[in-house]
Length: 189
Image 1 (cartoon, rainbow, N blue to C red):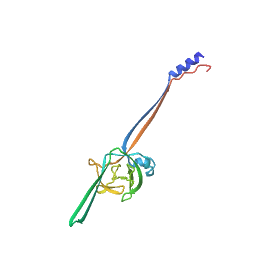
Image 2 (tube, rainbow, N blue to C red):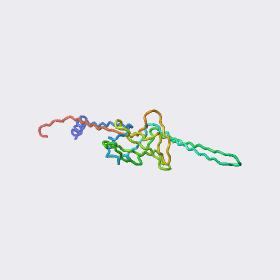
Image 3 (cartoon, rainbow, N blue to C red):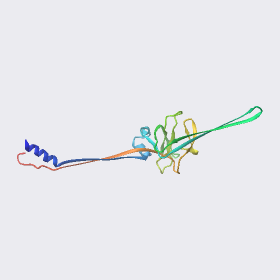
Image 4 (cartoon, rainbow, N blue to C red):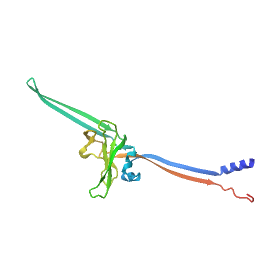
């Protein structure tokens, strides 16, 4: 019995199994190729989205009224300003998506409606791949305004590059290595 225990101990000493997992998570721009990799546009709501930089939405509401009171012309005006700040890296969800085609029909792109809050009017911002060179999904802001909920807001951000959508990606690589020393065979085994 002692010999078997010693033999098992010796065998255990000379047998190794290494399993190493390499993995890291990073935030990267979402691209058409990623969308295709996960099965197409219908799977885009499964991602958690982030915006690459802070977006500021501003709504100016001006009201004026003219009346005659006690023989005088009375002009009343008021200006209300509403500012919404969607900070960089704020999480958002796709609320809707649809496919578009280029004029010549050679390339399609998804338009993603991304919500960053639950609020009156179900506000969202549209993101789309704007050119064929860069696959990023940039904010779709024609004439520097966006429809957000029930109103049109002026949109601004720092720098020249438009904000774009990001997702987190985690890549892992499993590598296994096994090593053991052969015991050898003796007559009668």
